[in-house]
Image (cartoon, rainbow, N blue to C red; front, side, top):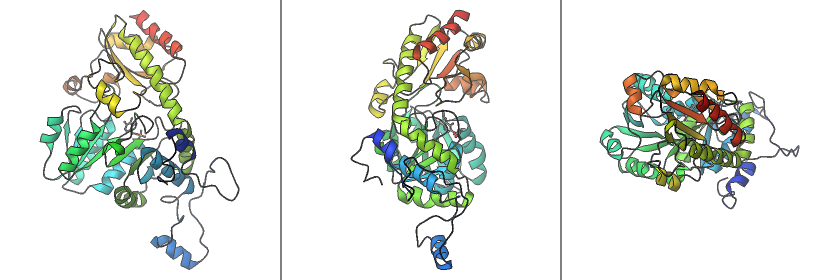
Length: 395
Ligand SMILES: *Cc1c(COP(=O)(O)O)cnc(C)c1O
């Protein structure tokens, strides 16, 4: 599938790749809502179950709509194989179940999605997989955290909410020098803006709930990488443990992939304009957006990404009271932590997404009380600006 689509651009792949038209001649993909598939004979049933004959068996591990989504996303990420999962967290768990064993060690960036940090720290630890957390941008810290039993480096870039950028190619080189795998959470950029596999990463995991759906409807996730990794151990783990994607959600994500490139460009353009405007406000101490020339990893982001995405944060000249007053004064932007929706959202990280951290851990991560995060949706930028102005007027 990858080869056939090599000649086409990203949007064409997002719209056309992975389609298997049935004899009905449908233009849009059908949704196969069936739990199992019928065989022509006992011999064929045996061959399908053993894998000697490819084909559908049971929708936990073979469903045509889910497979179409997997083929399309594999082409977009530039991987040989994709396995779709019931959520982004299920993608990370299933990838770990497939690739790790008791006694292995993970080195992960500090600033990963909160549940990812809990999965590594609280749950995998119970099964004998230990995790060390290091600063995303500190190359020396990654190197010195490595142990003889380190098997996986895990990073999310850009990191949420401060938009720090990790050097994927450098981390891949470090991982490979030490016989480890590099896994990258590509939820925030998506393949439309960043392709970690082409920079040397071994596995991409993502939450399709965010920009791949793009309209805040369905929960799902995916794992992409080489056939030898994702097609064998990871697929085997999914088939056995069962955190599979539903055909309906896969169909919604297929539609999402068709508009992903134009949506990501629009999210990025609007976020860039808002970030520049926020930078000129006297009540703003600092804006966190990799598209701004004064962002510490601006040059790296330019090199590694084809756009800067829709997430930005800014620190108000104030504390929790000012941040809450600002958020409460907005009328259009939704007060919710979700991202990747057409609807913009605003949140106070210190008391929501990062509220479970201790005060010290929050300070160390740079999440201060005056920090506000905006996930820029697809409304008119002028309307978003006017809404944020209500926040400034309230201070
Ligand atoms: C939301 C999110 C996840 C988890 O995805 P779910 O679909 O909610 O399980 C993982 N990583 C990142 C970066 C996310 O934003």
